[in-house]
Amino acid sequence: MGEARYFNIGDVVYARESLYNDGGVPDVAEDALLVQGGCRGVVVNIGFLEADEDQEIFLVRFEGEGGILGGPVGCLPEELTQDEALAAA
Image 1: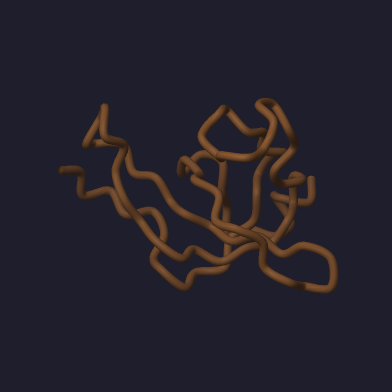
Image 2 (image 1 turned 90 degrees about the vertical axis):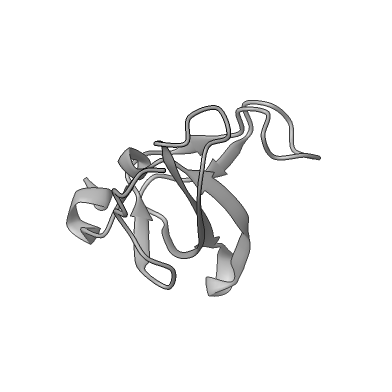
């Protein structure tokens, strides 16, 4: 398995772009907006894609209204950053 480890559990991250459901989130319409770009979240779990064990995936719970964390969203490393200014751009 891969050794990359971009982020760790508990790290605060930001969505680099808006993220939409690719069909992986049940009970949510496909192509529905899951996370607005720039939104802050926390890494809650780390795994690897079943089809590509070298591809890390991060489960992130992003803040919603009132700072309440939403359900976990699977994110690729390139969809996340720890640089708040970059996420806001």
